[in-house]
Amino acid sequence: MTEIKILKIGGSVLTDKTRLESARMEEIERIATEIARHGSGLILVHGAGSFGHIHAKKYNLAERFSPEGVLETHRSVVRLNDLVVESLRRAGSRPVPVHPLSCTLLRDGRIDAMETEPVIEMVNNGLVPVLHGDVAMDRSIGAGIVSGDQLVSHLARTLKPEIVALGTAVDGVIFRGEVLAEVRREALPKIGSELGASAGVDVTGGMRGKLEELLDLADQGVESQIFNAEKAGQIERILMGERVGTLVEGRI
Ligand code: IPE
Image 1: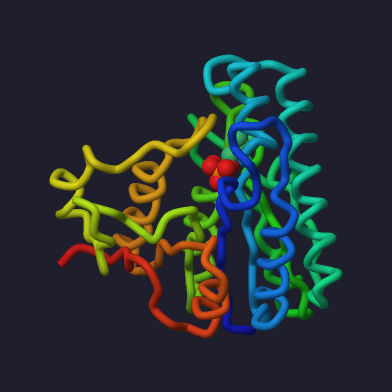
Image 2 (image 1 turned 90 degrees about the vertical axis):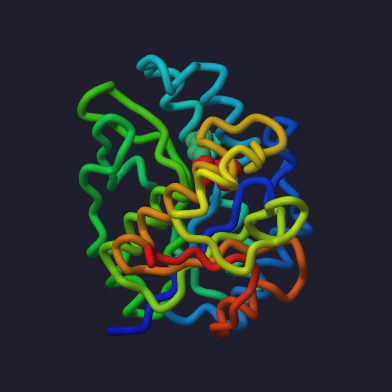
């Protein structure tokens, strides 16, 4: 089996989170070029930014089932997915879209079941599956939001990849103005209150949600990195196996 790398690029990097469905095309194209150079074995997950959070909030999807909200939120993130997939294709990669709504089931907002076999076959055949934060059916509350971060941690738990990295619009986990080189669960009570919310509309928890997701993953033996995907070259460095940003480690 191919060595797997899982990379998530946050919606804050790909879009202007304060303006409805505004894609940052230059960023998307730069990122696609970096990925195309080092994309072998890669599963790409991207966030929703202003393509999903705004709809999810409008229909209050976190609180109540809304058939219209499910459709509108999904169609919105699919529009962003299409832009990402198309940019990757133009950059010389072999992307293929994978929509979590069609292969993932939640229970109380957490992934209860996910069809990962097709994703593995895609990677084994040289394709780059491109997943995204999405709306998904939920066994207990009708429908809910599955964040890209949760998809990353579920896939990583199942597939035990070589590299797991979350590209954000900041340099890593920042505490008292400094980027932490590494972080463990033990540090959470101390740094937790300083972890910022995301700029713009965000229904899935900002940096704290991200870190909690990755600490759970680290507890299962899979380390990951949080880094700045807005800085040119960082994605390439990550995909080549370098340490960039903050390493999220398991308990001592
Ligand atoms: C959110 O996904 C999905 C929806 C709101 C539909 P993410 O939580 O992964 O998106 P970003 O990275 O914060 O934009």
